[in-house]
Image 1 (cartoon, protein in one colour):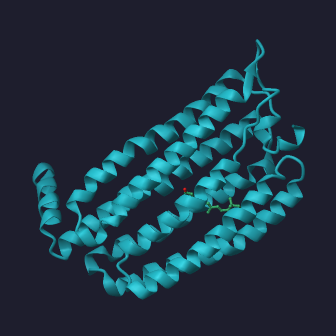
Image 2 (cartoon, helix red, strand yellow):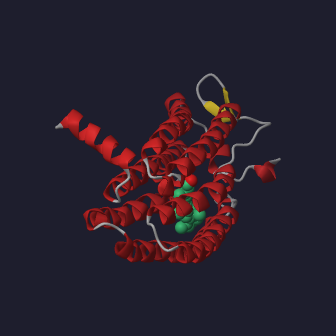
Image 3 (tube, protein in one colour):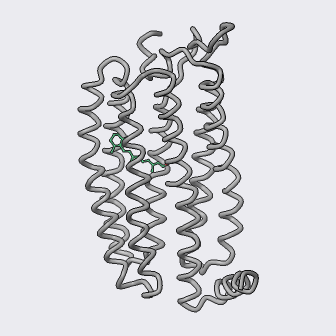
Length: 275
Ligand code: RET
C-alpha cells in the first residue's frame, strides 16, 4: 500500500481550513465545468455551422473535466480522517493527482482541435498540425505523469521528468504560435487583436500547470497542498472553461463578419441591450 502513496497529499496532516479549502476548490471545479456544458450547447445555436464544433467540443470538455474533478473530490473526501484536532491521511485509501493526467489525455487534444477549427486554417494544415500537436501533447503529459509519481520520494527524478516533459511543451507552444500567425491570412482584420491576445492567454494558463507540477520541490506541507490545488483549479477554469467562452465569442464574431445571419442578429441584440 505504501508504494501507492506517491503524492504529497498522502503524507501531510491538515488543519480543518486547509482540508475544507481543497474540498471547496475541487467542488467549484466540477460544479463550474458541469454547469457550463449547458452554456456551450446553447451558445452553439448562434454560430455558423462551420464553427459549431468549437462550442460543441467545449461542452464535451466540460463534461470530461467535470467528471474527472468530481472523482478527485470524492477521492479527497475519502482520503482523510478527522482525529479530533486535524485531518490525517486515511489508512486505507490513496489520493492521487494522476487522474488529472488521464483526463488531460482526453481534453488537451480536444482543446487543440477547437483552436485549429476556430482559426479557420486550410483543412490540410489543420490535419497535419493537429497530428503533430497531439503527439507532442501526449509525450508531454505521459512523461509528466511518470515524474509526478516521484514527487514525494525523489524530487530530483521528478524534476528530471519535468524537464523532459517541457521539451514537447515548448514544441506545442511553438505550434500554437505558428497556427495563430498563419491564421491572420484567413481571419478578418477586426479580429487580429484576438489572435495576439490568445497566444499569451494560452501560454500563461497552460504554463500554470507546469508551475503547479513543481510545487513539491518547494514545499510538501498542508499549505503547499492547498496552493497546488488552487493553481490547478485556476488553470482548469481558465484553460478550459473561460478559454471555451473566448473561442465561442471569437467564432460568433467571425460568423457575423463572414455574413452568418444568426450571429449578426445575436450580436446586434446584444449591442441593443447595452448601447
Ligand atoms: C507537466 C509536467 C511538467 C512540465 C510541463 C507540464 C505541462 C502541463 C500542461 C498541462 C495542460 C493541461 C491542460 C489541461 C486541460 O484540461 C505535464 C505538468 C510543461 C501544459 C490544458
